[in-house]
Length: 187
Image (cartoon, rainbow, N blue to C red; front, side, top):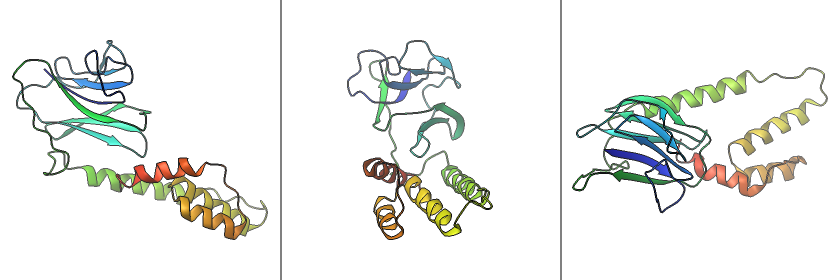
């Protein structure tokens, strides 16, 4: 049985997904496990010869798995920021080949997923309601630009923009920088 997980703790005492703050998709039963020995139905079982992929979306903090190139859907939401990829094997003599991007992935829809996220972001921007008679349009525009910069993690730009326009932002610079470092892996 092969287990694929992303975990927060580096040392496991139980099966992956059973330990606190560990997440796993187990091949023997197809269940997903999150910090508990009680699995949730998730996907098909897998065994020798199957190619299992694990994708982590650092923008919305979700994780999905693939089996033989087929997306199995989101397995986990609200993941913590520090994750360590782990593969667990149950039987002595088992082997695994890991591909962290040095070879093409069997799942070839990553670019489509990125395009979809970009389209959704653009649609949200285009559909943003513009309040009528809500004060100075320049101040409203400055607030919108500042909000966009904060949301996308452009910490240096948001600081310069705020200083130039007299805008205030309510988020810590460290939080903005953290989001910026994560988003570079997705786009």
